Amino acid sequence: MKKPSSKIRDEIAKLQEQLKHAETREAERIGRIALKAGLGEIEIDEIELLAAFEELAKRFRGGQGAANGGKKGAGGGNGSTSLAAGATAGGAGEA
Image 1 (cartoon, rainbow, N blue to C red):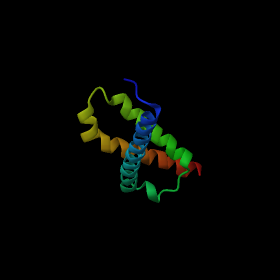
Image 2: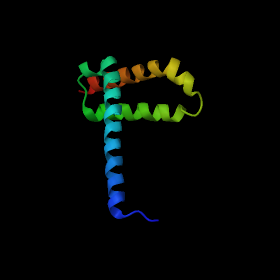
Image 3: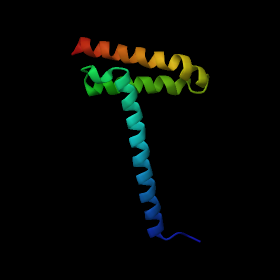
């Protein structure tokens, strides 16, 4: 009835590999979007950029329950662009 530890270790290894692939896909997706938004051309400290991404994530996590479709379609693109522009403007002024 119980699984031997070797089988559990094998399952953990498979799940870790799946997680690694999922994180890679997500990173590539976010990276492509960031490049399209022009973030690759802006000189900004990684800490400031991370803070801006955290604000963006917080903003969209907070609004997920209410109007998911509306935020993604109409406001999603504009919100992320304006936040990125605001983050870079602050970064350029401080740097």
